[in-house]
Length: 89
Image (cartoon, rainbow, N blue to C red):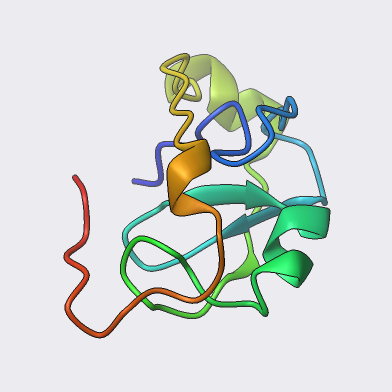
C-alpha cells in the first residue's frame, strides 16, 4: 500500500492524496512536479525514475489514510543521484 506522503522532499510543498502534482519513485520518495522536473525526472535518493503518483479514492482514504509524516531533505535535491546512492526507507 502506498504511503501517499504529504509533501515534496525538496521544497516542502503540500501534496494531498488527491494531488495530480505528486511524483514518486519505487521507494516512494515524493516530490512535486516542479522539483521532479528540476531533477530531470530522477530521484536524488536512489536514482530511480520519478512518475506521477496514483491517487486513492476518497472512500478508500477513510479506511487506508495517507501518511502524515513529512520528509524534507533539501540537501538531496541537487540533481540526479550518484550510482552509489542507497534508498532510504
